Length: 553
Image (cartoon, rainbow, N blue to C red; front, side, top):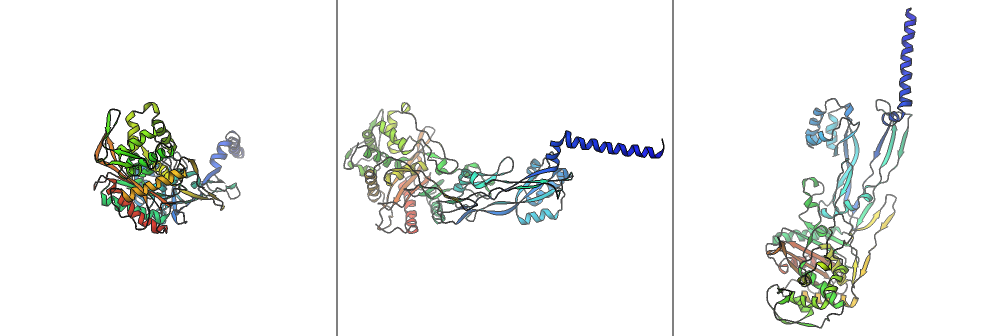
């Protein structure tokens, strides 16, 4: 065989090999190669919606950031690169090692880099690392409403996900719909200029306008901080709402957390105690039972009760909170003296069946369906599991576990002509195209007549005016309210030294503009709400009367 024939056979073999390879790629493995090697699909992350207060003041907005990604197949020495990157970002070598997966072509390596960090990584000129423009949450008012707003973290795939509060409840609305970019690339991963370039536009997340008023929120948080320090409480909350619409003007609890550095806090700080924790309400529960008895016609506002000593319920004796007895009391004076035995008398008049009926009507044992993630489910025992003494103790708020939001919602019905109104924190949702979806107030059911509402409002005004504790009531204003001191159950018994102190109040009397619930957990300065939660309420009420331009009655 001469040299020319050898050369011919050699090139023939080469051509045949190429044809075989092309046949394998284009026929036998067409799906694999066209999808994985040539056509690359990339998600285009939408812009997450902003969150504003009711006056369109920003509470949460987006700030430019960068995602650092890695292409493992282009990285020679991963350990060295991990060490170098960690020196700049201080993420933790173990974290970066966990994210690095040599089997993948593309991995998110580090999140939320700022411009300075990006430049430092770029200077190292590391092959296999790149950047993708991203955004992160920025809080112009810091942690002013951390537990209401929640925070944005990452899910198991590294995608943004809202947790707790508004960010969690409205995550789908806020996150929007991602776009998709399909690009045809060569075997080296470079875009083919004349190849496929398909871009499917996504949709940015919706902006939310809250019912929260930033100024009111700031006032509430400042007053709460002062109260916790003054009365040496372990924690506390203040919630302010419109009793007619269910709009929440302010909701703050301390201690709270920094939503930017949420990962430095335990989950206990993320939960909003107003909706997530249950407690025995104590005496702030009493007006609910009085209103129910008035509505059912079982008592009249002019009725009296002779408080001459402890009252027997089953095999137990129920006493007043201070074991003092005042003789003949009107219904209003039972609230003024916060008489437990007087409440048992009213409970007997109302009857066991009606007590259970009104617990359901007020919404206890049910969700309020407030638009915040993390609402706790409460439970009211079925009738077959109630003991006789429990029908007595529930009349003064003992032996029943409720959330603060349930109490606020139920109490609002006492002063808004008898309506249970759904509480809510979002007022409007604004889409990228400018469409506005307004959240209208929702009346759930009516449980009291206007007559009963007016009677109980007058009694609550008299409770503030003539109660045994004397507070600094703003001159010229008619304010109604009730204290509540509830001992905390510990291992089946009540510890008299550990209490939840609360005050719920409203103003002005005729058509209340706001209702406020103040709670302090285990105040050490005094166990009594009249000496802790109530003074805190009245200092806050002075601010609110000015804030909402409410003139004296």
